[in-house]
Length: 280
Image (cartoon, rainbow, N blue to C red; front, side):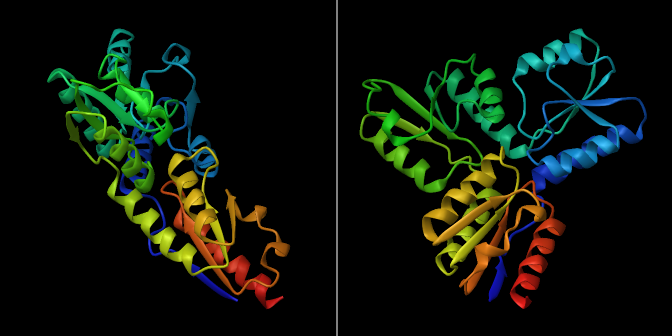
């Protein structure tokens, strides 16, 4: 059985940066909190909790002074509230997410109807919406475009950094057919784009795909969607213990891809386990 790992694995730049900021904050002493998990990977979050980085659901729950803003970003109102409560902020917002926030804000100020292509409930989208007074339109599928009226409107489009490229293009095409003036910013993260491309290539040549990463991770779910579309079998797991021997019966080629919040070590461990299954 041939077992191949996608060319791009391990933490992306934004995740690595957010973790480094959190670890530096804890080194300075005192309690450190994040609002929601710093990144979408339960195993990594467990390790960070052991080091003293705690999770709160809201800023009012936090008794200490230090707050690390997670990679997905927050609305501007969060910064204002933190200032009033005299909290010390460590901004772990991914720079690519910051770009989406700034472009959406710019389009809104210039009088464009702002469309954000992405998942409405994702923290990144909630953060971006805060920069435009929650007055944008969030679209996650081509079907959602047909009932919208863009006649005589100036449309500005940004996209969630982890959104699927093929879906983004399909949505944009439908909007272009209905609008007079449209400005489009492809704000998908370069790392996400590359991972999805490599996952597609690997899935096409594999009988079975293993996608490693958090079940609540948007970028990992996109990799799983691609994998199950182009490979005969696909499984989304978070840790090596979830692997089942029976998956690999009569399988000749296995591909492994990891989300941007998945440590490289876990992906390599999974490859080793699968190769040992093959050896019996």
